[in-house]
Image 1 (cartoon, rainbow, N blue to C red):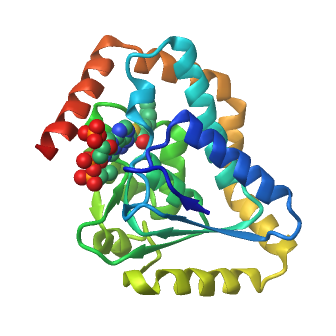
Image 2: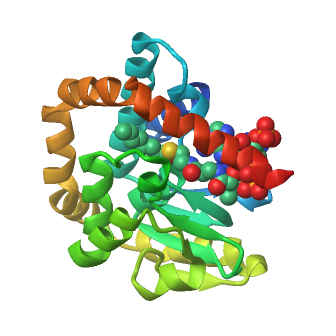
Length: 243
Ligand code: CO8
């Protein structure tokens, strides 16, 4: 699956909806046992949630958007398929969540590419299920420090503490992702799927049990004037950085 929504593959409501539909189709296709997630946009895997979806919109829109974000994560983190993230560019926040939700992460070794959950830098807080996914990948201490600082890590730093499993030169990425997929698919599906579910179920169930509450929390938080102001300032900063 190749993300192609220039300039930065930001996760808009439309993008997320299409992603969920594609995942559902693949999940229901008995011929499909695995998916490699990558980007068709040079130098960017995904810039995370589309900030414009969280700025200056109605409460109803925030609720609809957040339900879609939850759905994306539930489908990807809970997928029965083997999921490999071939991270061929920067991947902040929601982009990092997509990579974290896969079974294996391979990233291109390029000092310019960054990855991490940088929500704190935007003045917002990563929800508990972003945090749980991160903790399950890198451990509590590393996740705590990285989340509090809203750190964006270089590919090699991310590799050192296990946020990504492997680094490769750009030209080897596809080949490596296919090789990893073959290795994972060599196991009997039922054993691998049950093991995956055993490892992830508690975290998935937690969101399912608190889904409406989580939406309400998001809507209340994001519609605060102080948070709206932080997001507007962050967008301004992105634009200024360009000029
Ligand atoms: N949403 C909307 N627009 C974006 C986003 C985004 N996430 N990222 C970039 N853009 C826009 C820029 O504003 C710019 O717009 P324009 O052309 O109109 O000026 C355009 O995309 C291109 O961006 P850049 O010029 O910055 O492109 P670069 O190639 O130089 O850099 C980066 C690419 C590194 C991806 C850079 O754009 C960047 O750092 N973006 C911000 C990434 C970010 O911080 N994302 C966080 C989103 S929040 C999230 O995912 C989780 C939220 C959890 C919610 C918790 C709630 C309580």
